[in-house]
Amino acid sequence: MAVESYDALERRDPEAREADLLARLPGQIVHAQLNSGYFGQLLKGIESTEIDSRKALAALPVTRKGDLIELQKKALPFGRLTATPPGGLARIFMSPGPIYDPEGHGKDYWRFGRALFAAGFRKGDILHNCFAYHFTPAGAMIETAAHAIGCAVVPAGTGQTELQLRAIADIKPNGYAGTPSFLKILFEKAAEAGVDISCLSKAMVSGEALPPSLRADLTGHGCDVVQSYATADLGLVAYESQAREGMILDEGVIVEIVRPGTGDPLPDGEVGEIVVTTLNSDYPLIRFGTGDMSAILPGLSPCGRTNRRIKGWMGRADQTTKVKGMFVHPAQIAELAKRFPDLGRLRLVVSGETGQDSMLLKAESADQDSALAGKVAETLQALTKLRGTVDLVPPGSLPNDGKLIEDARSYR
Image 1 (spheres, helix red, strand yellow):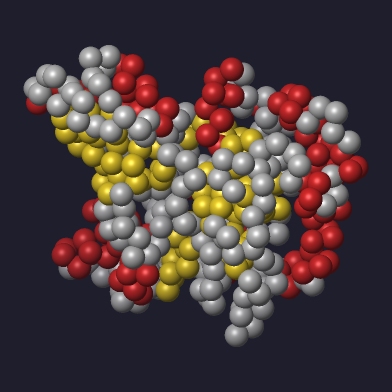
Image 2 (tube, one colour):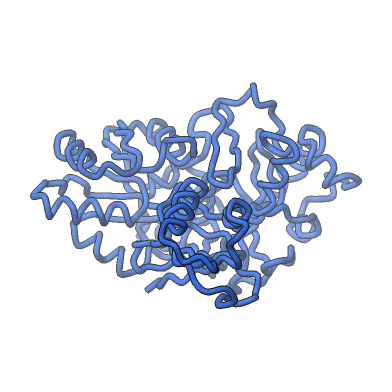
């Protein structure tokens, strides 16, 4: 089912691609050593010219996303990981945590054009962009990619469902970008209100799981949905094509699957943590552990693109999790504990099916006052930017296992 591709890079001989990536790797290593204070120290004594194979790369230490909060606290805003001074950047974002994310200059800086093209977007399309614009980079990631293709963009952002429906009905965009769960909400609310949003015929979704049941629901509304995998630090990592057989790796990253908690690569097919080395010169992340789980798929995509594929997002390797497309970190729950010292153990339970995420914070407390629960809920929302309910439970009723976040969602 060979289809039109974004550029010639997508159809390269796999061996030629691998040779090209590995040939560029030593230059990225020495660039990071010379221009990033953090990587200069972490990779001190490493001879960059010797890092010219996956085996050599695997010998380098992993820096995990979960480390960024503390690293950045010690040296604001970027923990000395960047190679470009803050004033030389185009944008500086603040993601939940907080984690500060840099954006440099250049067309389609985050490389999302490839994912949008694979989703069917072309010059002259109108894209209704429901990724967040406030502080976090997702909205800008998609908008700059859409402009690179030649699409007009409705910068809708998140929430305000009634206004969203009005804009879609009036402007009639033919495509959507955002989380799949919010697209489901838009279709459901439109049906309830009698608003026609059938113009949304295609979508590129990300930020949360897309189980088969949710994809089928969205397809039932006449919307062709494909997904992508990205992080605020790396930009695009992998994307789905119309073949819908795994996610194809982006051309600007080197991806490894490692055993969780280690830097040891796993054989293809084994589930492990996604570790990425980016060729971005502003933010030269070397062996960056995303905390997300996946596995390499065998063979090539039927669509004709020749890069390796991952199965897609398969959960978290650590307790950090995504709720409605936003990361929630154990450090945020620990901060809540500091603000309420009379509480005992805490456990944030994330539940829901087909993208309908909900958060319940179980908190041990001798005081069962509803006013206290309300104050804790307000603080939880302030720290995570997400609403959640609070259940005050008797002291000693939560397990003594050190777990602050439990992902109890069903992915069917």
